[in-house]
Image (tube, rainbow, N blue to C red; front, side):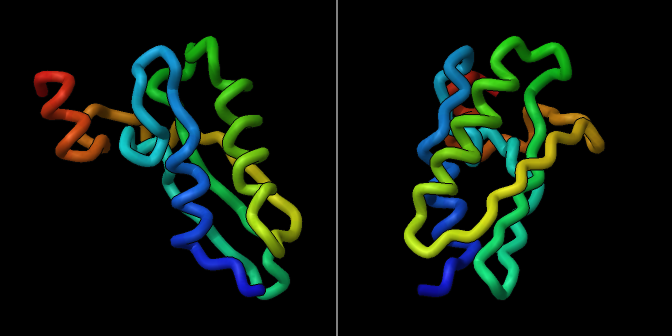
Length: 100
């Protein structure tokens, strides 16, 4: 089975920032997903702040969710703060619910 970016993003949409209560895709924390020919996946993501106390938990949860995809190869997670996350990166629905 060939793994697609859409399937990976769907899996990542099941990972929640427990402090904010929204999934990491809707929050705009996913900066990139690269699926290679052998179904290895690289996910580049950020946190709402470099001081996020749940960073390790969310990275591991994201890696685990993607690893559960049928046919997936190696999953590599990259944490970056460049560019820094801003509320404008969140979906319209999230911003609306947060009163932005």
